[in-house]
Length: 360
Ligand SMILES: Nc1ncnc2c1ncn2[C@@H]1O[C@H](COP(=O)(O)OP(=O)(O)OP(=O)(O)O)[C@@H](O)[C@H]1O
Picture 1 (spheres, rainbow, N blue to C red):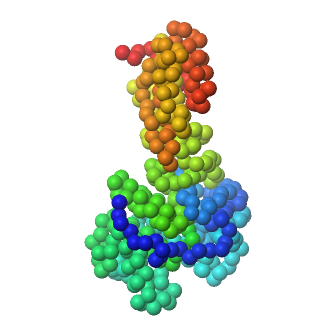
Picture 2 (cartoon, rainbow, N blue to C red):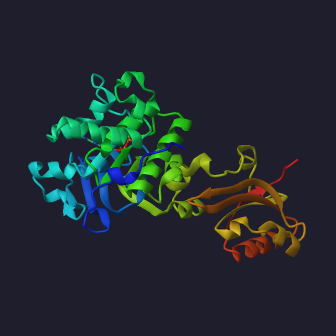
Picture 3 (cartoon, rainbow, N blue to C red):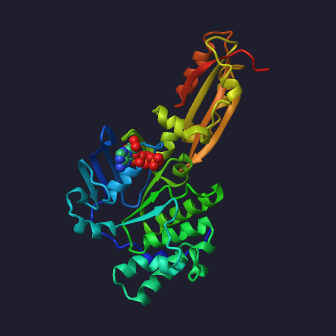
């Protein structure tokens, strides 16, 4: 973990405004026949990290452009710290845009300027004196762990270092909201983890509100408090990250969760049919139950009632989240029902996926 300077030196300006930094109500934006945003309603509370996840074409970029006022919504309200940006003229949007810092997939740094100049640029544009803006740039370089790179040019930095500069620049004007647009999509997994750790650290230290737009559930899993799934311009599922992981309701959410959630191995899934010698059940559960002696108790209550096939326990937002696959002998047709009853009585979600005949 990096050692960062005291957050008090660079705190975001406290605002007397409402708890909600962002509130969208029934926002619509259509391009010809395509409803890019089809009635989006969501809120982001101060200090919260909200992940918005969706496939390509789901409406993420349109949502970002509407949020920073680059795109006009056809209808609906977009409140940033209580002010409806859909009603503002272009010249009134400018100060509001300064309340939103942005980081991008490809960093968008100016190659002819040094790291400190890149970071100080928003203050230069705002007319802040050179000494003051460089002081601020150095505070931010300390915060992102790049104090020794002030005089370097972006071309000499790694992708992770460039994104740290991008984060520092986004924070220069002390924004109320950090908007992250696929900020880790161009980075390798290890660098992604370090950038997510940095964002979480800044969120904790500064109380910074972060809206993460991504197509990767791993990013959401890493740092978000809540997740909203966007599909065809609509929020189709929303909740605390751990609860969406344990009980995804929508097919699109299950698909986005993909391999970061245990799946029945392909060679077993491919064998499943409507009859067979064993029923294959998925078992999902979260909280203390996920770490309890659930299977030992099941074994004691119903001896020889199951075989563990696959799965494990993950920890999301400090919550144990478990997903297992078990095989239950089908010779006693009532057994699968009894096992299911035993597990559901202990708050597990159980689904019979099919029957297997060949587990040798
Ligand atoms: N300027 C535009 N003109 C016409 N159609 C557009 C325009 N911008 C977006 N769309 C359409 O609106 C829908 C949502 O697009 P958007 O770019 O917001 O999705 P996205 O989730 O950001 O996708 P990606 O991850 O691929 O960038 C798509 O069907 C897209 O083709």
